[in-house]
Structure formats: structure tokens, C-alpha cells
Length: 93
Image (cartoon, rainbow, N blue to C red; front, side):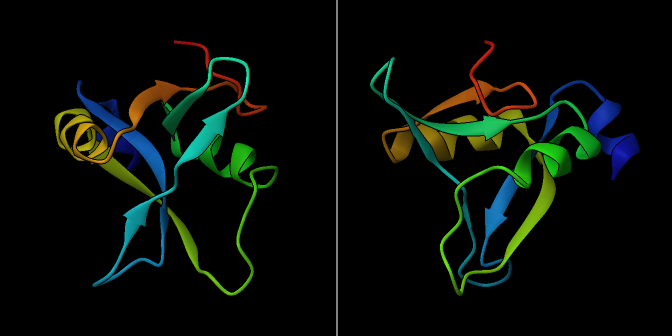
């Protein structure tokens, strides 16, 4: 999917419980006081940051490419914003 993400409009996200009941991993930024879905420009960047992200025991996680329009729509309906994050998981834009 790396080629897909290179096409404008695609980003990488972490998906919780991939499959029928999957959802996007959401985080909370204490400084900005916002709920957000972290996004990444590449699969490698997502995998690197995923190692340091908080995770719930017993859940499965997977990095997937998703179109930004679909992600933004789902995020807005659930009270989240979409944010690009750095390798430490901090919002950069």
C-alpha cells in the first residue's frame, strides 16, 4: 500500500481490531485538550511511532492506508480531529 499512500489524499493510521468491528486509534492531547486520530505520511513512520503509542491489552492493531476524506468524515462524526504527528506522536499539523 505504500504506492497508494504516495497518491495525494492517502495517509496511514493505526486501526484497532481490524476486520468487521475495526475502528481508528484515537488519542487525547492534554496540552491542546483535543481528541485526535494520529496520521502518518508513510507506513514506516506509522510503524515506528506505533511502538510508543498507548495500547489496550488484548486488542489487535494494524497500520493501514486510508483516504483523508473518509478519515476526516469518520473523525468529525465521532468528535475527533485528524492530525499529522511526528515520530514521538506529537501533533505537527
